[in-house]
Length: 453
Ligand SMILES: Cc1ncc(COP(=O)(O)O)c(C=O)c1O
Image (cartoon, rainbow, N blue to C red):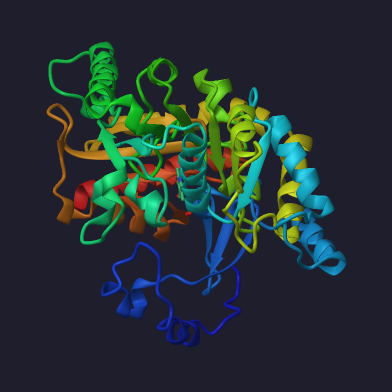
């Protein structure tokens, strides 16, 4: 049994000054509603009382190589001693920014040969939109400004990223709505009644074409999509959907932005999922999280030669920049992290163990309140329903996802509640025994909730 190493009461008092992300700030006034995590090792995290939990959400879908990797910590420390900070503004660069830019673009598919580094997934997506708008300005097509997104999407919290995020995420908040148009979520489980999945897929593509025709392709800069929607409910689109949507983009000269903030760097068994998993060649890939496995805040907006050629042609300036773009410590963390992914063949591990994780979790579909278990490899979600046959959802107030998450936490597993869902995105190093443990804790937790309601 681990001993408490910290004064939890004092921490929670200090924490009263912290504005938490995506939280009900009123509920958080109760100190008992907050959990203090103090340390982490491998696939586990520990709370202030010394309790161990399997980190079923890998930090926040980001700790791909697992916690406590001294190679990454050492690489960051070494770099900070050598060159603590210098920028990549103007004509300046430094060795690790150069090395990482070469490495990331070599791994990215096709002609994605240039990269802009930022510090979050939100910034990666905002950067993509700014670059595209500038690209079209320079091509003499200044009306191409709008972005197509999808209901259920999550693209971040900065002003543009939240505008491209599903409207449900900004109730009571403002955003740049005039720049974004939403298509339906490619959510097969909740497709319209009397539609087969194939018919649903046709419907989605027809809707996309109709929307483009209505707005006019001359007004649309890009289509942004997560390969598998994460925060929107782990939505795996119908087979062939991404390819068909990408072909529409090609036809209408709309740039395709693949938001791989979650899916890149191994989560689906590949460094990038767009080409290897979904057979598309986006014009821009945005990534973050797994790029450093969360050890340092870093993102990458990886762009095609075509975009770069236009924005780097004589007669204009690249008027975009952030002090910490390509920060030496972040580059060191990313390079050390990528070395681990490659040396330990983490993508191969995910391709082998991921299907077992899927199968294990699928067994939960026999439980009364489990409507669907879905996802792919180490990106999974469990949707709870009141009635399995009619798929009737639980009322929002029932907080069913939170109830399951609380039961799981008591049993040593942290999962993310998401409305009527529990979501899993563990560290990619999870082994067969740990996978079994996750499944058995969930089995008990869901059964307990089922008895309670
Ligand atoms: C698909 C996707 N895009 C973008 C973001 C935003 O990333 P960040 O929180 O680093 O700004 C997230 C965060 O969860 C995400 O899941």
